[in-house]
Amino acid sequence: MKLTAAVLTISDSSFRGSREDLSGPRLQQCLKDAGFEIVLTKTLPDEAQQIAAALRTAAAQARCVVTTGGTGISARDVTPEATRKVCERLLDGVAELMRAEGLKQTPFAALSRGVCGTIGASLVLNLPGNPAGANQSLKAVLPLIPHALDLLAGKTEH
Image (cartoon, rainbow, N blue to C red; front, side, top):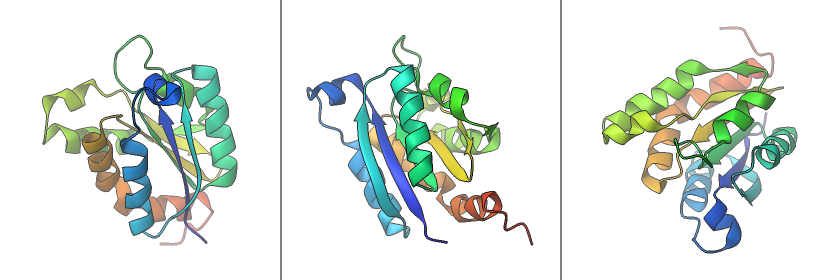
């Protein structure tokens, strides 16, 4: 099965055009280098309803949906809440792996509230908004993604 991905940037300032999105393009390149076809990219404001709707749309088009931004502890950081609302199952261990990898570089990784889960046969990963943190988080879990997607597609033989 083809590896398809969507990258959603969650940032009020990038949505308004007052800050360049550095994380989204970097994640797109990382996914392309790993053999994924990027089928959707979008920049959204930190609005839970818009994020939830975009996650549903992205999961209908892509097997792997990656978000960047909105995972911190500021009042406008609502990506984890929106993700929990639409995911059928959470993958706590995947989010823990990303945070553990981030903690090797900075103690601030402990402030990330990103979650990972599934919508149908699609995988959803919340990554930090910081470009280095987002890239590092994705690289930490990239080796797991093809197997997770196989399992979600019903390929359970080991």
